[in-house]
Length: 223
Image (cartoon, rainbow, N blue to C red; front, top):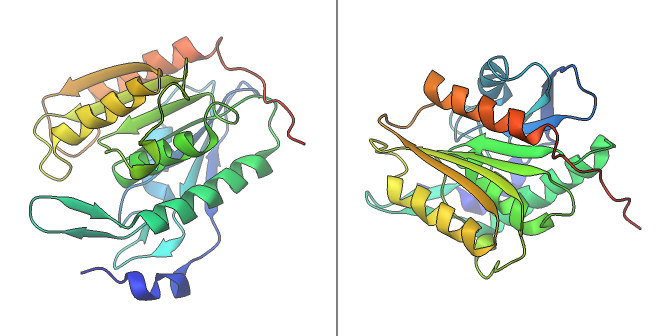
């Protein structure tokens, strides 16, 4: 059951924890899934390339356990997302990116609900503020509708387990299709596992990150 009516009373400032990296120009933002927190993504950060500065963010809404980027309803077959909360969280994430004051565009990524948020931020800021997107076991959001051509050349890594019984694999392929409609450079891989991250997936993500290291472009100052 959703508590959308009172979610505004539980919105908190974004909290982050950073795993420092060797290259001051390489930054990645990681967003956790529903009912988790920044420490969950910090565990993933510890397995990723030591070249990258990885910023693990906590979602703004207190949940039953942990935190949420937005609330959902579930009818046993379909995920129903509160898109107004997605928009609010995406706005907060864009402000957080602006406040980073880094020289080069960060990559944004996440797991499950965090992957949905990463896609929403990409749709919101286009290619102006981010250098790439990582979606692990995610799904598309309304913000990606009508995105034709607006993400041209944006590197995107999408991974999904074919045994996923939380976010069905068809959501992963739909997400891939939306990004491709935006002319993003999508790398899509399926794995023989469920709704979790495996070391095989981590190895592929590290390989993808290594390819991005010489492609990350500088931020253009905004007026």
